[in-house]
Length: 169
Image 1 (cartoon, rainbow, N blue to C red):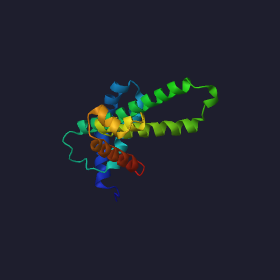
Image 2 (image 1 turned 60 degrees about the vertical axis):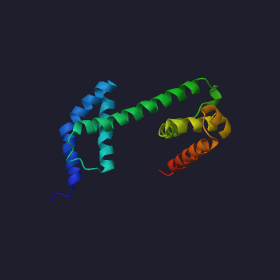
Image 3 (image 1 turned 120 degrees about the horizontal axis):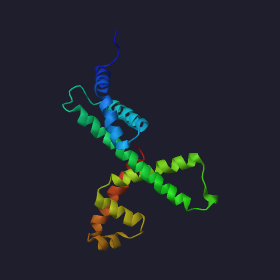
Image 4 (image 1 turned 90 degrees about the horizontal axis):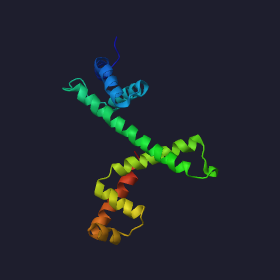
């Protein structure tokens, strides 16, 4: 008796039919077999997690490439954050060296902040950063960007709502 769902069978069929192609596609972009294999596996984990039907995909390779490309972008963004963190850390006195566990948690937090900021529309992100990093008032931001204080305030409210919501995802 087969206890597997039709969704699981469909994903298995998709995997068997196209995982080799996906791994080759990723190898061309990464130039490393182990990383390509890991990202191919992560692609199918994401498909399983989404639980969207895959049995009637008209373009399964495009579907797989889209998901894998998203994972690649996330990976490259994380690597950029890690490099920036390493650069800043290298410039600090040795007394500020932190444990590997704390370093991991810090990088995870930086990646989450980076994803949150990149998830905001460009205008909202600019307003948010001018307020939170540069310390400008809403009036100063409005003057600098040619916006009303009301528009700045509404953008900041939406940005804060996104920040708040991100804490509960």
